[in-house]
Structures are given as C-alpha cells and as structure tokens.
Length: 227
Image (cartoon, rainbow, N blue to C red):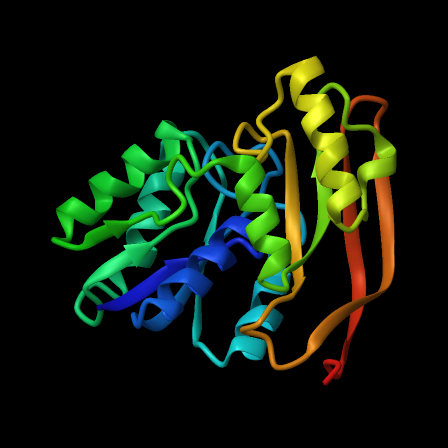
C-alpha cells in the first residue's frame, strides 16, 4: 500500500514506519502536527521540530501543519493535513498503542477520506515492544516526563535494558503505562535502521517544576554510523 505516516519523532510513530517498510509498504509522506501549546490532547509537543531532521535522514518528504492544540478544534487541523495527501495514498499509518481517544479520532478522519487507518502497534505487549525496539537498533531518549515515579533524572536518559527494568518496577508501583501511552513520558528517536546518520545532542536544557519536566534540545549534530 501507499501510505502517509503521522510522526512525532518518538518511538511509536517511527517504529510503525519501520514495521510498515519491512512489510513492503511504500511510505510516500511523513506528516507532523506542530501544536503551539504543550498540553495538546492529541499531539506530541517536545522537540517536534526535529521531525524535519528525521525525515531528511530517512529520505521521505515531510508535510507539516500547525495547530493551536485546542481540544477537538485541533482535529480540524489534522484533517486539513491528511486532506493534502488523501488522493496520493491508500492509508494513514500511526503508532497508536492503546489510546482510544486518539485512535478513534484518526479512524474517523480516515473513514471520511476513504483511507485505511493502520496501527501496527495497537495493543502490543509493552515489555516485548521495548525489547523489540532495542533489538532493532533504535536509540531512544526520554524528552518529557509527567507521572509519579518519573523524576528529573529521566530527562535526557537513553533507554537501555536497565531503564526497561526500572520502568517495569515503576509500572508495578505507580501503575504507569509501560509504553507511555497515557502521556507519562515522551521520547525522541536519535537513531534507527532507517536513518542514514545518527543524531547527537550538542546542547539541551532541562525544565523541571517539581512534578513534571521537559528536555528541550537546542542544537544537534549528525555522526556516521558504526560499520
């Protein structure tokens, strides 16, 4: 199928692209929504501008639509973005894990435009998913936290096996979603098999209010992959 993929720069949307490409689908476009507020109900906010760099590293055209990020109103902006590709693709690809709120609304827009709504990660086992991400060569950084148990030390942290074990314990203690589908945290993919080079962080700043925080990336550089 010819697909357009909604991406945020995080693990879920990019892994969905990775799986779709492995299955032989043609990813014609990447689509990103850029909310002007950090508490958008639908869309990822921290470092969303880096999707442009990720798209360049994957060699796939990126289309962007801005939104004020207001509840329900932001869906009109998403609809406008999808309408730009509706005549060139067969479906819309998303990295939805378990959020009915997001998936139902995207499904509705796809149905309006007679497009398939494809979510290959829907209801995936979160622990296995983390292992699959690492096994596939995804390098993932935590860029925002907003849940009990996830403190300032997680900001800018690269997910590895030790981090997964810690997240499992936090899941048991605080009932956070292991895959962060409840908005507990946001991530950024710094490297994966689809990138021709790796993204490295040159300058970043932590923002922490005592309960939640963000890791704002100010500058990056690209480096060659190891052979």
